[in-house]
Image (cartoon, rainbow, N blue to C red; front, side):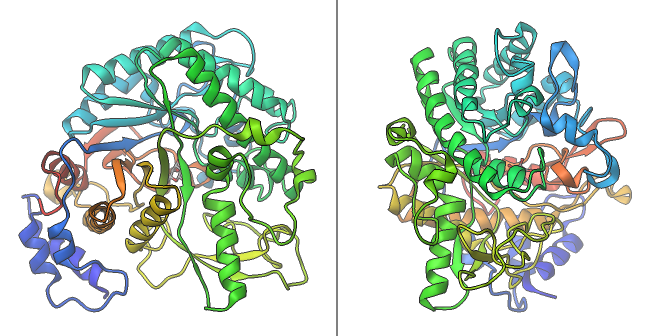
Length: 514
Ligand code: FCB
């Protein structure tokens, strides 16, 4: 049994009906076996967050809302995907999900109860423009308007992602993200949002995880529209980079209060060996998977993510695009879940895609990840794995935040998502209480590492736990649970997990030994 499992099990034994307290943790961890990733208790105890730190949660439209065809909403590529047999584990869909489209007042009340100060949500583009272009559907606007009002009434900052993967299907039929025209359509959509909601929303991010939109959708084929073309991937990436800047300008033009940032996925990359080749491969991973879109917007050019010359022609890069890409962010937002270990694959012969599955789509391809970046990225298993299969590696939070802070001249940072998947459910012998201790341990350690980076000068102003409620987890369907609140999908009943109560105490105290 490793140190974390020992801690979690001992806690389960001592917690009883009372909530877990710091003293129990300390006792439970004394004498624990070695776990190379575990964070010492002294670091957890020392962690402090400043007054006014924005404790948040992150959510996304398709994963929570349901109401897939209500009030004039158009079809999205995720509706099409989940309605296609064989795509999603268990054959389930997001047609109902958490039914948050109807139940949001209750969910916002729960967020308030957890002392949440910032609520990151996304707007479903096909609710606003059912076919992706043209005049807005006012019923869609009204829904989000009420939603934002409810947040403000609860004293919670509304934080809007304009696109969390649910592209109008009609735009996929016009070529999807590899079609450069989508940058303009997206900017129009962004302008509509800012015009109607910009009096109340001041914190905007164009895309959730643009690399994943391009790679998972167009190269790996794991997500809709399920294409497997590396050139489509590169074209899509370029359109997304243009679109984030166009949207930035559109939002600023329509709303004087707007600030624009990002919600990039990032995983700190460590070279597999100390060889120059592996170090260069890890740098390519960082350039492609972590900062490709950040560099594009901050500097108007792409970082060197490629072996050899950047494939600008394949990307559809035109003279003058440097200017279009440039729109420096007001603050930098990114996610942290886990890390990668990266190995050079530039000398391997086969360069085709290979098999992709689950979360580790970069791995297991016969000839490196793709013919342009040519590295092999793996998720190590030195630390324990969550039930969603990601390695627990809190130190990665410190390394990543420190690096981004240093490389981009100490910007304001927001952690846009961070969390873990464990399946704990109601314990019938304890009146339905949900003792998800492994999640508490995960957050304690990851947040302690965040606090350490902040103590050394990183200007982090917000942390968003992924996620408020267990919800639809993409191609994994309902088989992974990331929530601070348990969702019973049979009857939509919500139950706050022990981790949710713990998070609320952390948010109230700005410390972790609560
Ligand atoms: C991230 C996604 C988010 C959620 C978490 C678990 O990659 O942004 O929607 O599914 O993973």
